[in-house]
Image (cartoon, rainbow, N blue to C red):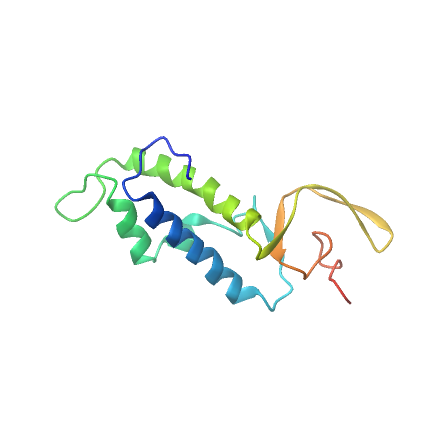
Length: 137
């Protein structure tokens, strides 16, 4: 269930598309040793959906559009995208595809390091949110 201020006419369709995008993103990086910062736009809904026709059309079903198919109430659209961004981040964090490392202190090679950001990485690649914290190195 997505928490939005606007009642979505096709919530399940939007959820399905967002889940597909998360899975596709994972497939593209699953073999890489990559850390993604959640506050640094490494995981960004706008970027992930800007050229995703199905997502754009699904969103438009919830708005009045002009004769060119453009959403009329841009402020309401921006609010929805902001709210969907939170859901998109939660999909990554709660998926079985990514490990989530909240900001905080971690022990890496006997040293205490501090992460100032929430980080995700493909599951099983890292034991802490730092490049030197690769599993099985």
